[in-house]
Structures are given as C-alpha cells and as structure tokens.
Length: 225
Image (cartoon, rainbow, N blue to C red):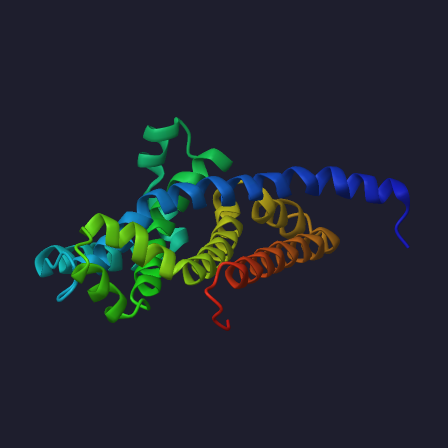
C-alpha cells in the first residue's frame, strides 16, 4: 500500500498537470464556440430552402470546414508552430497549445451546431415566418432554444474531444496530463504515473459526459434523451 510520502509526491506531480489540462479545455473550448457557433448557424440558415439561402456561401464554408477537420490534430499542431509563435510568442506550453486546439476544434463545433439546429422541425420555423419573425428572431427565439438540449450534448462531446487533443498536445510540449504521461510515464518508465494519468483522463471524461447529460435532460422540452 502506498505510504503518505509517495502519495504526496504523486499529488504534487499530477495536480499541476490536471490544472493545465482543465485550463486548455476551458479556454480552447470557449474560444472554439465563439468561432464555431456562428459558423454552424450560418451553415444551416444559408442552406437551400432555409431562412437565408445562399448555396455558394454554404458550399464554400462547408468545404473550408471539411478541409480543417480533415487535418490530424498532431500534424496541424506542428504545421501551425510559426503561426502559434506569432500569436502568443512561443510554441511550447499550455497557452501555446490553445492556438491549434481552437483552430482544430472550431470546425468540429460548427458541424455539431449544424447537426443540432437541423433537428428543429421545419414547421416550427415556417410558423415563426408566418408571424413575421425576422431571421435574427428565428435564430435566437426558435432555432437555438428549440435545439438547446442537443447543443448541450454537443458541447459535452466537443469537450471530450478536446480532452483527447490536449493529451496529444503533450507529445510536442503542450503541457498537461499528456505531457506528464510522456515525460514521466513513457520516457522514465514510470508505469504508476502512466496509470494515474490515464485514470485522471477517464475521470475527467466521465464527469463531462455526466454533466452534459444532466444539463441536456434539465433543459429539454420534455423529450427523452
């Protein structure tokens, strides 16, 4: 059984990595939604037959999003090193890792939002249009409220996706639990550190999933999830 000295050393080693991972998830997730949410909304409303149809813009935007989503995160992170250095002044560390995390996650958010908004029945939108609602009113008072439980679940999926990205970011000095697993668990043959790192990542994912499910049920309109 581990003694108190060992537990203290492990806690001192793992705690900063946990906070770095949570910092990357929160910061990159928030910024990805600032970019991805309006993109997802525009993908829907500009589609053929919707409230602001513009097929050319929709297809162009969709193509750009698909290209960004096609790039593996670890490749994108390396390719963006000059850009990351220009934005934050360094390419190493948790703050630097947020730049490629945002660029990689925002297109994912856009597709998640698009999928959620497309679940809103067309009859509800047509009813709003017949009452004279403007496109902005339809977006803010119909599309987003009607799909909020799906959007919450999508946010949970996005956050879990970012957890995986942060672990990969550790391979190139991004900090966090991934960096801890590589530097101490792999390079120093510390199996105990590797096991604890994986266990903490699993716990974070479970907490995000559980919170997302509960919020989605709470804010659904009596729908079963």
